Image 1 (cartoon, rainbow, N blue to C red):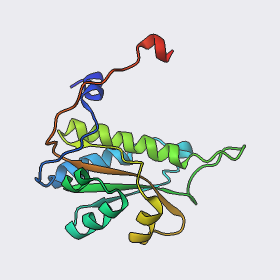
Image 2: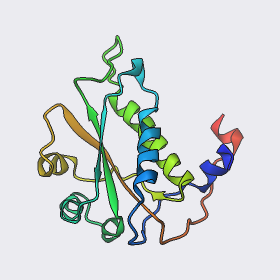
Image 3: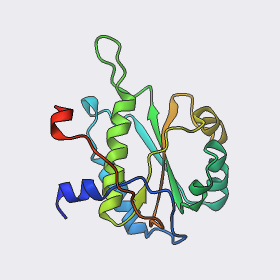
Image 4: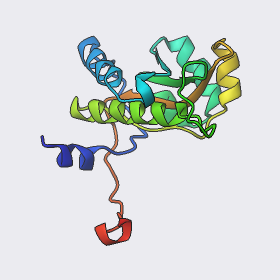
Length: 164
């Protein structure tokens, strides 16, 4: 599949089959994350792959939507503030770097036939507490991942003229 087809095929999946993800597919996805670019190549991130049933239940406390519990795995994408690059004017780039890596994750997953969804509307302080994250680490996004049990809905997109 060419890149444009891949980008068009990726969507926010909100229902997952109960099947677990093969280790080699998950390893491939995480290897694609590892190669994501970041400011000054700092790679100020940590990606925690949650597959344990009890840990997934705990994680669902941070985002109380029934569909999240259908995912066989959820990845907590965090920024490591003591490793992020800061521009001369004080602009921190850690969240931007994590966002780039998460999109690598989502596109790699789509290439492998897996669905994902960016979840940013979650209780990040609760997630930090429940998973005993270090002080320098803040969760930026939750990314459920698994085989889709739904189909993408048609979305309207801006035209090229509207984005230029």
